[in-house]
Image (cartoon, rainbow, N blue to C red; front, side, top):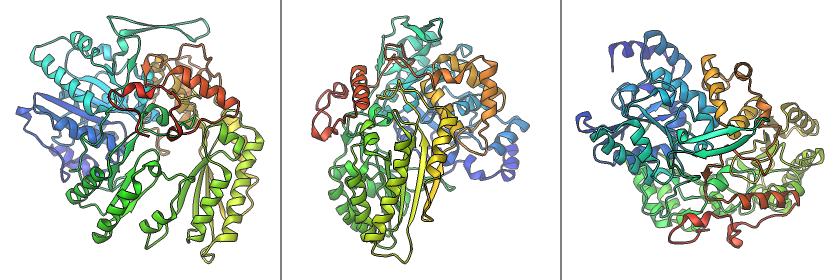
Length: 611
């Protein structure tokens, strides 16, 4: 650490964000590292260190001989100001080496509102923003994560994208780069060769042309690039790398606990959910593997809490066997075991009582819509009776705090559906009055509504987003029908969700807009303290781009979509059929009731979807 940095750190919030030196961090001899990777998370330390995917890939890369992967996070505003004032370039935590001195710069991107952070981090590092400006083999910028499933808004800045799960594809990339560096390849030759690795998308190898109305006319592959690039998956999670020797953060993070991934994918098929489709097929770990990984992680880290994580943890078939093993171990070692992502249709009071023997915390469920008609439209596969039966079960067991999450602006939604949320909430309150075993504490019902964002690779990818003004009207309509003091209602402000929709469904013409927003000071857009909507509106205006083109316009089913080059394993025909069923109010049963033919099984070489 430089003397200048030592003087700066005491002047900023949470200096431990920037120092490294945590327990279990990986340090290697720089002279023995043929390939050095700056692994960047485009948000703050607290968010990045809570990310399971980053922990996994950090370990995967450092398991490789000759490779040293170090972590880099976006600085908070006070630190960025100090860095610019004193000309301190962005650095990696393990060695304090400037990012510009690394061979490869990797980003994992899980949220569209981090795009400005990517450009800001490159700028702070002194690395040219545009891919075409980085002409040598040094500072190759690549990215992965769920946002890579529509990479086009970042096409100007990222050299290539790694699609899907990274445990197998990342070593292939780094091995190729090791060879390229040893043989003194040009950047063009490296990109040509890396594009041959299945799951690699090189934006510069595709030419986009546009119609007079602004829609995409065609996407033409060049230099032998494939027409579509299919994502990569890990078939056997039992043998896949998992970081049981996790880094222990030296300052508080968002999820300051051990995290155990029980399975990947989702059986449910909610038509609005990008993760539910793009992460298919379902693959699970055996309970004995999970138990071993849990014990090793806890003993290596000293954490007193562990969470079982997935898109829908209560759908894990061996949950009882796993918790029957884990609960005695956790009790004996005074460790808290939590199981989030529970569904109202398979809530287990017995399990929750075992997990919460000392204090009953709140329960969280996401009905998403207030009426059965609209829940069928979105394929939630959840009935009002199931919701109320779950609440009755919980209230009679002593719970008195429930959170309910909904969306406003879903396709076909009417005012009747909006008011259906209020009706459902009052039925929950009535259920508590009739069945609560502990009425002394009173009931708290926390209701939250989000602004629906249509996402790529879902049946609703073609849908319109309602205007922000209409969203606010529906929020106020709902609020006007909440009379009980037991209800606490919050709704997301629309500005951020509108911008999220633009970035989620945008094309490469958004690159200049993102760059202009950064030039005007946009940063840390996912944080209320820094998000400035007017900055973005000014950037759109300066680039003559209308954000409504990507939101309230909607897309035609015969339209070329910006992400048509990306294959997540779900066929477009299936998505169109699901959209038709939505408008007909028809549901598709979950995967346990039979394969619906989404196409994800084609990604598996040996076995069918493990639903």
